[in-house]
Image 1 (tube, rainbow, N blue to C red):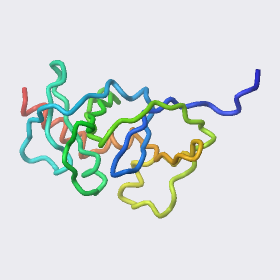
Image 2: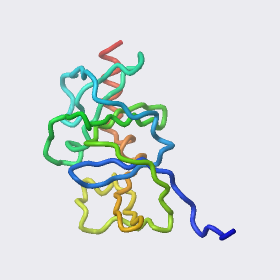
Image 3: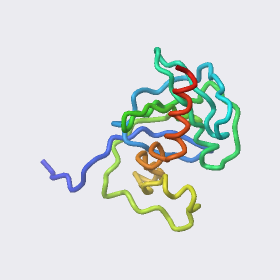
Length: 160
């Protein structure tokens, strides 16, 4: 049996603005279709509101808006990736969720320096898997962002 020279990261592959992104599957609680969103006043534009997910009030972030991309209409392909990290549950709205792949750690490179410095904090690296390029998200920084924590806490207080 051949020795594997690299660890594999099982990742959810999703699409945003015709680009493929990846996040480790161990952060993903579930992948849902779009549901009714309850808007919460006074939140940043990228916080679309909250949804009631099986009795749990979950804040929703539109990743397109978070990354400064043009807003798009939600379609039947739009998905909400429920991310669980550091005792927080957040829904991330993406254009579509395509696949689950094992990505070799050895195929991950640092993000290119041309990446917008504001969004570069949220990017772990870029992986080339058999000719497909994936931008890997840094979930620690995306979910641990102080603004998102603050908005999550504010929403919880308003809904109690």
